[in-house]
Image (cartoon, rainbow, N blue to C red; front, side, top):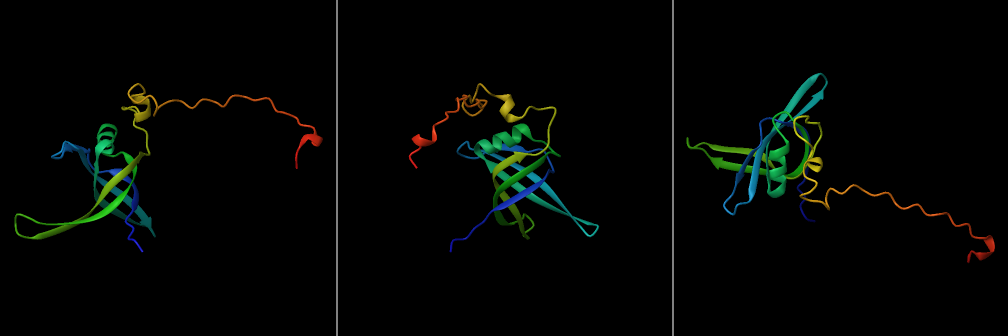
Length: 144
């Protein structure tokens, strides 16, 4: 059986997303996410680092900011490194594949409203199906 690594979280950004470009000029965006869980009067907060690439990175950087509520899905990673002090460090992070913005941001337009000319096929409004007159067949003409 193949391994399966998938995670979906809803939470708020803990800081503004930071967009950089890696060596081959691929956009990379890093941000923090906080997700709350309440149980029996206690609140538990999970903080996780997130990273996304390509178009997802550009969209996250352009349309989100600290405090925005987002749903992310991706792959969980465990990172380890040695600090300048010689200590070993580790943390979990998420490589984000998909994002959805769950709250409204009145200062910025939603992506599908911002650039309809740039990607006209992606943002076309659905057209209603043409109305067809109902055909009433006599019972003798139905082949079954």
